[in-house]
Image (cartoon, rainbow, N blue to C red; front, top):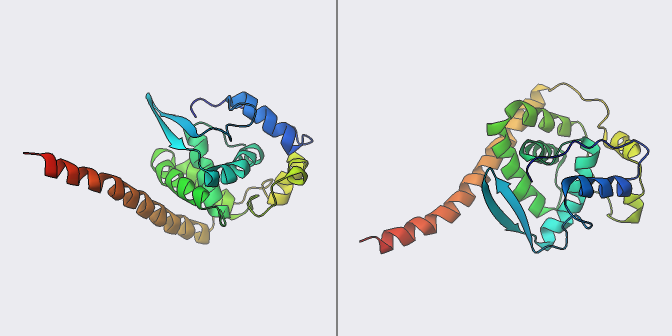
Length: 197
C-alpha cells in the first residue's frame, strides 16, 4: 500500500479481467498476494507486516473486487474509504474484514473525515459481495452489471439515520482500536515496570 495508480474499468469488462488489471496496476503479483505468508505495508517511511491469515485471504478476495466496483484506490485514504464502505454494508461473518475495516474506519475519520464519512453513507445505501459465493460465476460478471446490482450508480445524500449510524459505528471502531492498543501496550508497560530499577 502506498501510492495507488488510478485505474478505471470498462463497464463491459468481467470482474476476472478487471481483477487481473487491478493486480498488475498495484503490483500485487499474479495471484494478488493471496499465497504470501505476510502482507507488507508502509506507514509513511515505516515498513511493517501483518500475517496473511486464511481468514484475511477469504475476505480480501471480495475486498479486491470491492475496490474495482467502488473505485476506491489502494492508497491509505482509499483503504480508509473502502473500510468505511464495507463496515456500512456489513462484513457478515468475515471476522478479519470486521477487525481490519473497523480499524481503517477509525483511522480514516481522523485523517480524511469528509471522504471517509461519504464512503460510509454510500455504503449505507448500497450492498457488497460478501453474501455471494466466490468462484467462476462471480468473476464472470461484468463490472457495470455488478455496480448496478450493488446500488453503486446513484449516490444518495446523508440522512439523520446515516449520521447516527456513523457515530455509533465510530464509537464501536474506536473501542476496538483502544482495546487492541491496551492489549499490546499493557504487557509492554508491565515488562518495563518489572525490569526498571
